[in-house]
Image (cartoon, rainbow, N blue to C red; front, side, top):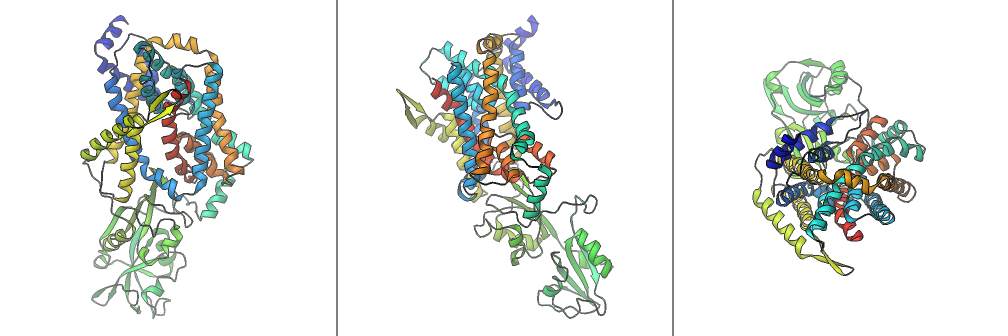
Length: 562
């Protein structure tokens, strides 16, 4: 053990990577579906390794990694955050503000009653509200306090101790409340409520085995029979013969000729038509009424599947059903909607928003024409715009240093961390309106956010390891009880505020509560209990605001308790 301690002290960079590896291992362990996650796992791993020796931690390395994380998270939620403020109405904003502000007030009240120092108070806030990034803003705030360096180091160690003690119930509490206690307080059955909301939105649950998961749309050829219902009708009229089916005729073989299908073209007996549509409609409807033929030349239509970044003001705010009836959607099929990284249910009543990524499939000319109306095609890229990345982090940090607010007898700066977070939000928002600006591949953003935060908290754990036992004794059982109070109070307040003041749908409330405390596992628990993904519509409206405000609370709670 002495050899291990000496080795870790001599090679702190290796200690960090060991902590990250152990952290992801610990975070991946689950008991009845509950796990700590890689970030908290890295914190515990750092604390554990810190028991073997005082591993030196570089403040500069911590700051570099944390600023990368903050920019990455701001870049990811920027379009969603500003869109929520503009177009989602007051309800998700109101719910997010209620939960986050109540959480801050609850943490401040507990810290005041227990007489916690700024370090313990910050860890209580980050752990109980399950927002580990608040540890970073709190660390920077403590480093700016007019205290001796040794005292600041002690307080920063207390952040990790309190976060580790409070996070376990923080995560479990949100999952339990959203999936079990919340529905009981609302007197609802999750499955029944999900069915009602799905019916309201027009979502139809798929029957297993009816549609191929990897090929939901097909192009097939059918010969029009003598006396058939399509004979004598135009292409546009024939496409409406099967109600609510969205079938489109792409080409027509007439004798030796192949014609591009024009809406005004009149169909004749003996014509062979290439029809595009959902597989189950082609198989179960046309397959039983028409004669399917094999015609390679006719079916040789170039089909494209692209992701389109929705920037159109004309389409934003409209439902899928409304857009599907427009001329722009002719021969175009929607396969997926992603909003803020989450997949949104496709239904006639689902409302489109700017910044949504729509995966569409159809003939290549049709998709390219649709891109001019919907938004640019998002083509995969491996290149990172380091010019924008570097300047944005620098300028954001500069603004954070320059801008300060008077608090009592002190002037508290916005801080470099909050400034960089805001810079990430701005770049992310600009990307939503100018998709070719500041492009960073999803993999790079994932690395920035995952590795950046995990490494930061691992170093915080390594720093806190030698004082962990002593600090736990100092904090006492009151910190654990206070953490339970801070976790559940905003959940209860948000639940009743959203239900009786905002009049929100119960299932969207539960998804919104998970989002406001940035607990994706809470959303997953609601989806599992309800048997439906529809709660994600509440989650996406609050999670971006939750990330921004809860991260900022780290600095705020230090200012309030200092």
